[in-house]
Length: 256
Image 1 (cartoon, rainbow, N blue to C red):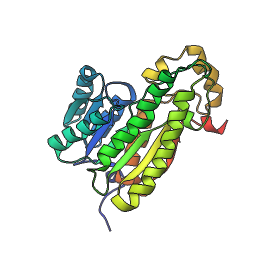
Image 2: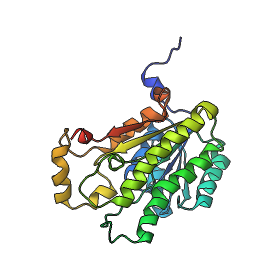
Image 3: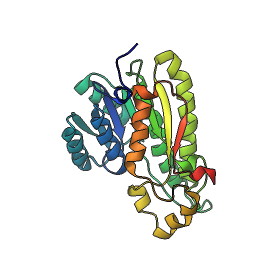
């Protein structure tokens, strides 16, 4: 028997989390939520100057933060981020593969460079980060890949590269879970967000979001904290029996 309450199972005290794409948007929300749950947080992003605000949010929650300039499409950067985490904290328990970019080019006009740039960050970058963390993570660790509903459905824009990268990430999640959960004790899962208030959705024209709203049963965009709550479930002991799966958090859009 354990004396822990249900809420205790969501605590992350004593753990160290790595969050990529942490300079703004959902990455910053994830970092703050992890800190509020008790984790120290290592922040990676290409725009290292913008990590200061996220670091302050982590520290305001009473936890330690470490900011490292990281381009996840460069394997050496991913290794350096993990090495910095180990040097500062001595462990890595959680990886949130959040770094991502999006494009919307018609398939007949998208250049090889445009397509590859999305795959390099959204899919390859997640693999390089998982590799680097997987080499140092101990049993009980957790990886969460931030996929998208566009890995599971379409949504009216020409987003072949983005959709392919996010669908590929779901496949990568399954395979890494199969390889690592039983052998290393590392759980690997994915979240598939719908429309959340973020830098990416702010780039969409208002009429586009409106055109998709009829598919969303909840009838609104998601609040970032709702996605962060799902993340905390997956990386904490509360999600200890969950691995190799993708959890959609999209307001019911996949039912349409």
